[in-house]
Image 1 (spheres, rainbow, N blue to C red):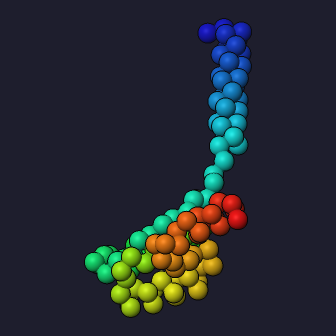
Image 2 (image 1 turned 135 degrees about the horizontal axis):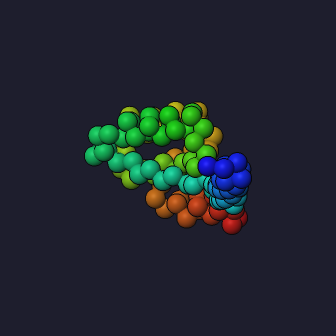
Image 3 (image 1 turned 90 degrees about the vertical axis):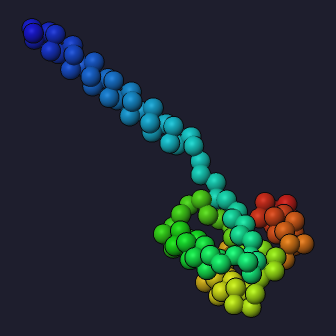
Amino acid sequence: METAEVVAVSVAALLITIEILCLYLCSKLKCKNYPMCIILPICNEDKEFIERLECLSTHIVEGDPLIGTVLLVDIGADDEQIQFCREFCQRYHDAELILPEDIEISMKKYLHFE
C-alpha cells in the first residue's frame, strides 16, 4: 500500500470511531432512567417472601437507579411477614406497608398527583 492509501484508511477509521462514539454517548444522554415504583404483594401462602424482600434489599443497597418507591401490599400476610415488612420500611424510607385499598392513594403520592 502506498502512503496516501494508509493515511486515507487511518483517517476513515478514526472518523468512523469518533462517529460511533458520538452516537453511543448521545443515545445514553437522551435515554433517561426514571425510578419505578415496585409493588410487592404479601400473602401467607408465599413461602419465598423473605427471599424476595432480601433480593429487593440487595438491589436497593447496591444503588439500583430504577428502584424508587417500594409498596408492600398486605393481602393476607402473617405476623412474621408483617414484622419483616416493618423492619424493611424502617431501613428504607421509600418503602411503605399498605393495604390493598390504599394503593390508589399511595400511587397518587408516588406520581405527585396530590
